[in-house]
Structures are given as C-alpha cells and as structure tokens.
Length: 94
Image (cartoon, rainbow, N blue to C red):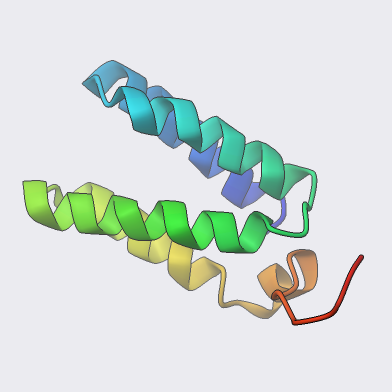
C-alpha cells in the first residue's frame, strides 16, 4: 500500500501531463513524494488532492478519473494505509 498509492499518483501525473492538466501534473508528484516519505501531513494532503480530483471529474464528466480518485480515497481507508499514514491527532507530534 505504501508503494502502490504513490506510484499510482505518479502514473496519474503522467496522464495529467498528456491531457494538459498542468496543475494536477505539478501537484500529484508532490503528494506522491509526501506519501512516499510518510510525512505527518501526507494523508491529509492526499485527501484534499483526491477530493478536488473527484469534484473536477464529476464536473467534466470524466468517469475514469472519478473512479481513480474515489478508489484512492477508499484505499486510504484500508488498515494498511492507516498503519503507513496515521491520522492527524491534536497535540501529537512525531
């Protein structure tokens, strides 16, 4: 899980670059890097990015993009993802 999601985001960045979605192509590798490095805010960053992707996919009626975004959000709910990227809690510092 900790390898698959960053790699999927890098693959999405390549697709976004081909499609001309420049902002997504620039942000996706940053989110992938944060997930790869297991940054404390990586999970939150991924949720925000993937939520924006899902909304944009619904607006432009891109169903494969919507499936990707919602599938990735669903993958973040799995126990392996929770172990790799713990949720933010108030007062907790790594």
